Every structure is written in C-alpha cells, then in structure tokens.
Length: 177
Image (cartoon, rainbow, N blue to C red; front, side, top):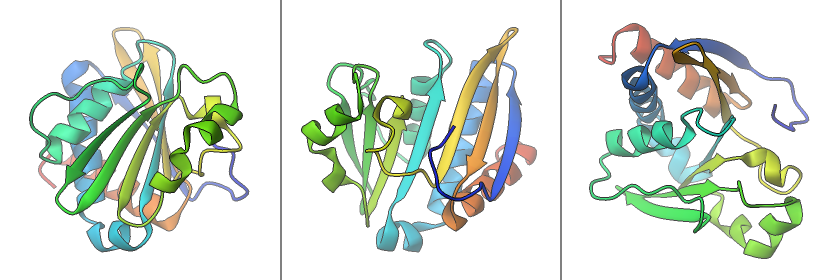
C-alpha cells in the first residue's frame, strides 16, 4: 500500500467486529501516539488511512481524536481537505484527499509545510497523492468484512513500529494498557 523505499518493519491485521471495535482501535492508536510524545515533538508522525468509501476511516480518525482529548465537533475534512486541532503542544492535521485527482493537487494545496516536527498528520485517501504526500510512519487499511472490518496495520518506521506495538498491546488488554 505505502509507496516506501524500505520494507515494512512490522504489520498486523486486526478484526474489528463493529463500530465500538473501530473506536477502540482509534483509542489504542491514540495511546500509541501518546507514548511517543518526545519523538512526535522532534520528528512528527504520519498516519495513512485507506479503504473504500464507508470502511470507517473517518470514524477511526474521530475516535483517535476523541481519545487524545479533542472536544467539540470533529468533522470530516472531505470538502475542506483539512481539519486542524491542537492536542496539548502537538498540531494534529486531519487530511482527506478523496477529492484530489492526482499528486499535483497536494503540491498545489501547500500542505507539505504542515508535515514535520510537532505535527501528527493523519491522511485519508493518501493514494490520491502518492509521490507527493510524505511516506507514512504507520498505515492502516480498513476493509469491510461481513458485519465488521479488518484493519491491516503496517509500520514503515521505528516510530510506526513502536506505535503499532503499543496499539496491539492496548487492544489485547481491552483498552487498558
């Protein structure tokens, strides 16, 4: 899925039986990010979310933001392309590139400067900007399966691998890790 020069460092597929399970994954991802605050401040973090329409990408993003303490409206950035939040001292940028026709749209939007130290960039539909959008630390692909979802999580960096490991530990502990 990711257009990365390196091989993935870790991967896991998680079965999400229903909407609460998707929310639990969002909360577990938040815990994984929180455990790396020093790294995020120094280097930032890029999380790609992929999957067909209706697979639960925005629901997962909303649960992650809620678990990080965002209150008030958490809107889908489908039409605005970007919703920005401040979470403690981090800048959290939630992108949705569904409306992009090619990677040039990313360059034209001027989003590149938002990626980097002190920023967590969650990108829905990253495949619409391949070659322009920065490579992920962690990618999550949601696929509809029966009544639930399968979340294929792939770590592309050491930070992504640490986040994935913490996420899995939290999920296995029922959200209590």
